[in-house]
Image (cartoon, rainbow, N blue to C red; front, side):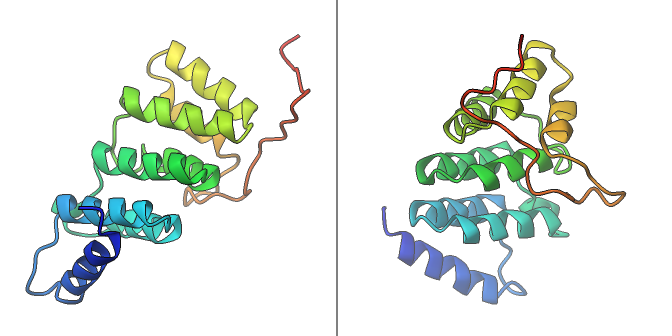
Length: 163
């Protein structure tokens, strides 16, 4: 409990022996939490992406996995990766829950990403538009659904385009 380094070492050892050990979503999410707890959001993100790409359906990320990652981003103040995770939620077949909306809203507000926050808020007020909000928040995408631009939020503190 609280030994993030130990948990990460055990997970990495299990990962080396993938052929003999079936690593599922619970073990992977636990490792993701350990990376986040250690402040290593980059490794947590890599693991999340690897889980999404894994051919083993038992290892695919679920809502708990994404919320764990977003909590880690919240603690570390990592807005960019949180926003990127939000943009992939639909692709990963995950239905957002209240916690996910709370985490991403808080992160967007902390990062002063007001345009994205407005889009997200509007999608919450109008159910069935959350996936569209995810796409609009991410900027342009190409035919492979990869992001082309890094961030289309041109927010300033004094920007008030609601007039």
